[in-house]
Image 1 (cartoon, rainbow, N blue to C red):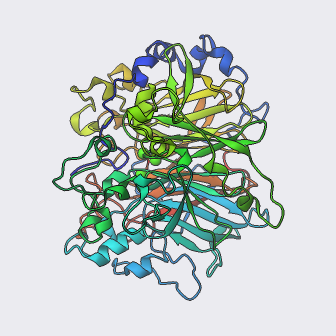
Image 2 (image 1 turned 90 degrees about the vertical axis):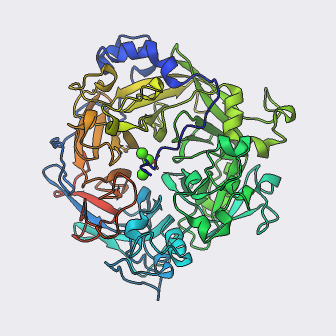
Image 3 (image 1 turned 180 degrees about the vertical axis):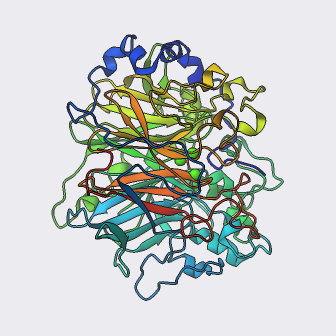
Length: 637
Ligand code: FEO
Ligand code: CA
Ligand code: CA
Ligand code: CA
């Protein structure tokens, strides 16, 4: 089954407007020439003066690199990139550091104390305010069972399922700069893995709800595991927020007919990962509520190795890409998140309470333990005149009543898609990462593409579904009126990805600078540079409308000029995802996910190196890349 793991099939059958139908007037403006055209448009007042916080002078000081199809990382002249913390490296639990095995013979127990597979969102947590020592907390989104096990998925066993579950989740590792390089500190008291079997507490309105109760957890308050953890955000109080994305691929309903709720959430007959064959929890016919216990944003305190991670249900259930935080002028937290699924939605949660300082013997993370359990969830509606509105998902308001199938607030958040359908939210083109400019109030969001057909069906156009022809992707931006808690907004596009050499007008894009497609990761650095990372699927790369764009890459956008400049290109069939910097800006960590990915998303175990040998010449392994300047300067400057 050829599939793109970041594309759940359409399950939104509502008649809500999609982003295409409200974009058309603005699109005419963008195609006239990007930011220059925008400056003369009706949307200009919103973004006038939205330039960087760095003041005058060019933000980008590196020389652009060309596209690449090589099986290696390329960075600009004067930079060095080194891989660390590859899949299978021991994380550094004292007395339990099983070494990497090239033949994939590591056991499930070994894998549970090693780096997981498919590194994704990542954040650096400085130890003692240092730029030379800290923790990296990162997601392991999913696995390639063809590479994970000797023999792949043949002779599928409970041990293989356990190993796959142990390769999912989140890792915390301690890292230290040594000379011009960085390495893991092992053993480390902070080293920790969260997997598909780690106990997570439930917080917020769905905790203890009847739809969350199972035979193994009759109270509905403790869930085993997190999975498909994609992007991540770092809170001002020092915790890590991770999005549970495509959880539908893990559950199987079998021959039973899905009910309306299961159908809306994309529950399938069979599970791509086949855990249900040896772990009954993932058999949705036997344990229907288990499915409701995934699709949340989880909060982890990496600084406290004994802390219990929590699923924050007040933020709503979704195929969450991740979660990103802004702070209102009066100190409340606002969490934006999107659902990377075709024609699903963008959400915003506004906390009821203000962020508390550390004190009374509590760290700041501990003082804000329940902050994200109380507040108001909203869903976005984008209108054709460039305005928009945040619609509250509050039980009892508007259509969110008992008569319409919402018994209480718990059911509203568990059924956030149905609630958003009823409110008239705008269907989006697979929102992936967000980035927030705390000073200007701008929020950026990648809409990666909405084509599930891609270049295999040249040129990526789905004739049966003309709305699904956004093959190249784009980045939208908005600014809430007043403050981050504003209920209205103004929105427009930052850039349409594409290649002017393409024939279809909508595949040409309006990039001022280097070509890219399928934007996914985003990071706004301390100088105001917007870093853009791409995720073209292996089944689409270097073909059709993407033929001149090469491997996935990372680019830097200077928002004051609109210029986008290519900074890094990745090895064959990887995606580039996750970016974080040390406080001094002199080290950047990014993740390379699934180098050597096959178009079917599951490698042939007999040919592990069919596409890539990155990073160490053997089996392809996701890994973290440390980027430094040879002169020790700030990355990108
Ligand atoms: Fe896991 Fe939407 O990227
Ligand atoms: Ca991915
Ligand atoms: Ca992503
Ligand atoms: Ca993606």
